[in-house]
Image 1 (cartoon, rainbow, N blue to C red):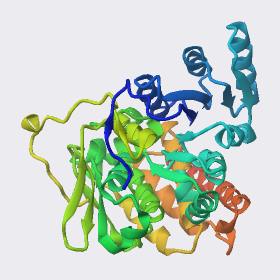
Image 2 (image 1 turned 180 degrees about the vertical axis):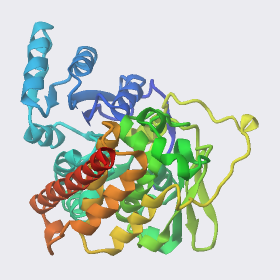
Image 3 (image 1 turned 180 degrees about the horizontal axis):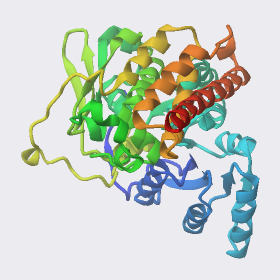
Length: 416
């Protein structure tokens, strides 16, 4: 069995690991850089990417001086390139999706943090998997959109896949290192969920929820899209789908319970009825540090869990009235391949519409369910990246039509 000793920042065990961070300006990316900063003799930042935040990515380039920086948008990349050149940095600035794939699969890269939010992260994460990298997967959509295709790429490329979502990291930490033994030991897993900011709010009042209220998560600091997903518990629905692929489980082997304190991050129920759990403070630097160092452990910077200061740890079943979208996870997993891709695309459209004020909070689920009903999924769609991307685009078109229908209904009611 591999050594699981605890390493310190001063411990430069083995050769320097070159890290590519996809989505460096988001919360996962910045936390990854925070962990790396604690281990200067162990990691080197080789490449960074950011979606749109030029000032933030420039600041990271100034701090870390990576070999490459990538932005998907050519105009923003040109802006960054000019500022990088003016600062006298050695960083080469690239643009476009292919550039993201290129840095993820670069021969000199050892570790790839896949933290691009949404379906946009699928292609670069696939490139890293096919190139045999250690892939730290924080982009749950890569598995939700193309689970079978993605896991085949991991196997074919000989990649090492380490989950970074706190719940999946918890499961991963509770399982033996040899995946071949998992099915012999595991009866089922239990993903915990905080319940978000509306766990005790009357569902009859959900129509008046504002974006700022939905983004005020009680335990975690996250981006706005992920915060809304937590409030609807669509994040947990996506995590159920992700867990099915990560751990080779049947849908019925994945359970969800509410745990408002976010101390128990998830559990494995073994065949002998033993329950293994991973506990810790709600800090994403813990799973990030584990992913960077696996199978060892390094300092994360997170606070130590003080059991003497803990309040009661409580667990309860999710309320279907508050979280109607959660059940869509099992429904799409039981449906023909491709339906999970449709669900993810619809949810991205619905959440964006809510954040822009185009639909109400309680209408997010309607958009998701109606899109699943209206969108056609041709047989064989999930067998190729092109097929999945085409399905993703069609699902977004259908979801947009559903949101527009909602808006037109509102306008007509006001006119009447």
